[in-house]
Every structure is written in structure tokens, then in C-alpha cells.
Amino acid sequence: MTVDVIYFTTIVGLSPAQVALAISIAGGLAMTLSVPSGHIADRFGPRNISAIALALEGVALTGLVFVHSYTPFLLIHIVMGALGVVAQTTRMATIAKLGGEESRVQIRAYQRAVTNFGISIGTVFAGIGLALNNETFYKALLLGNAITFVLAGALYMKLPFVAPTVERGEPFSFAAMKDPIFLGAMLFQVAASKGSSTLMGGAKHYRLASYFISVACILYAYAQGVNAVVACLMLTLGMASHIVGELIGSAGSWSIGFGLADENHQGQYQGVWGLSWGLSGTLGPALVTALVIGVGISGWWILATIFAVNGTIMHKLVTKSWTRTPESQSA
Picture 1 (cartoon, rainbow, N blue to C red):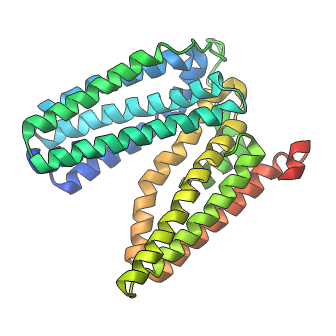
Picture 2: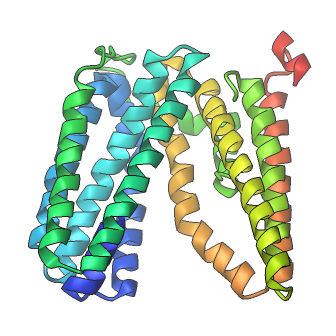
């Protein structure tokens, strides 16, 4: 994505606003496939679908090297966004099916670590591309990235086959959309989507993460209007608190998403859970910009409050649904 943005703004000549709009449109349209793709994963098995979606996304990415105007740029990103959502939803369903209750969160954590490593490597190459500012090098990076998607799809086929959990004749039940506890948890994840292996542990980790990120917001707020030494200290402490919150919050979120889901409809449930990431990516930047840039220090405090309240309500929502279980007594 980093190379994509740099190439089309510096070489092709699209404006940053055009690129941002195309990505937002693609993301918004792709969200509509999150739940249906989960249902398809339950019906036909998620592994093969994820592999096909990844390979096709690589093919679509290849088309970017031939793009020189806005419309095809937008259309290709819509296709890539749709395939990306299908791949993400079926990937989560694959993890849910292959991993047991205790191992699925650990598997997801490993997968997230590998993803972050890949993003870091991609950013380095994007920086090299920006320094060289050469069209041929940018296109080589885009094609190289496309190949990695195809290879990832091939590697997926090395995983054990995951059998369908829904009969082919069974109608689309919208089971996840009818689950009020799961939907409530999904919506609260929107605001705080930024080591637990159980549902109760996940709820506690999520709540703790929201407090860490709240502290980070407050530290960021007071990094302005002070001398350089104090500002650096505040930003460093804020970043540390933010990172801790991100790490434990992600694990908590995965535990909740897996733990509340119906085992026979994991694909559909993970599709609904994935909607929260799309919503946060769509609404989050505008909200943060309005509060931080438009309001200032008070805006940071509002954000801190939102995160803290979000984590507290999420914990109450999840644990309340399990008050009859012995495990919940330790929540």
C-alpha cells in the first residue's frame, strides 16, 4: 500500500485526495462482502476460498502497473478491496477452525507478527523507491508485491483442508447478525480496535488495553507547548503506553471475536467481526482529526474518555453474557 500511494502520487500524477478517495470507496464497498464471504466459508470451507482470493488479489495488483488515470485506479482498488475482505474473513475462519480454543489466539498473534514484519519490509522498499523516484523500480516493487500474494495463496493450500460446517442446502441464516451480544462487542471494538487465550481473559485484556491507550492520549495532549526535552519524554511515554495497549488489546479482541462466535458459523461471525475494522478505518481518521486538530487538548481528553468507557463497557458486555459459567467468577 505504501508503494502504491507513492507511485501514483509522484509518478502517475494523481492527487493525494484522489488516491485517498479511491481507497475509501474501495474499503466501503468491500465491507458489504464481509458477512457473505463468511457464510460462503462456512458452507464450502475457508481454506480454498482464502487461497483463491489471495491469488486473484495478486493478479489484480499486477494491473496497477498499466494504470495511468483515475478511473482504472479506482476500479482495480475496488476489486482488490473486495478480494482482500474475502481473504481476511476466510483467513480468520481458517484460524478459528484449525486452532483450538487456546491456540487460535496464539496462531493469530503469530500471523499478526508476520504481517507487521512484512509491512516493515515493504516500508523500507518504499523508502528506497522514494529516494530513487524511478518509475521502473516502482513497477518492479508492485509486481514483486503481486507475486507474494500468489505465493501466499499457494502456501495456503499446504494447510489441512477445513471441512464445511454448514450444509449446502441450509439458507443464509444471518446467525451472527442476530446475536446481540456478539454485535454489541463488535460495535465497541470500533472505538478501541487499537495474552489471552480465553473469552474472560480477552475481556480483561481489552479493558486494560483501553486504559493504556487512554493514558497515551493524555500524554500526547501535553507534549505541546513545552520544551523539547519534556515533549520528547511525553511522546516517548505516550508511545510506550500506546504500544502496550495495542499489543494486549489485539489479543483481547481476537479472544472475544473467536470466543463469542458460534463454532458452526465461525466464518460468518468472523465476517461480522471484520466489519468493525472497516468501520474504524472509515470513521476513525475523521474523528481523530476533528478532535485533535479541531479541538486540541480537550479533544485528546475526549478521545481518552472514549477509549476508557469503551473498554469498560466491552468488559461488562462480554462478562455479563457468561455470568452463569464458573469461569466468569474470575472475571
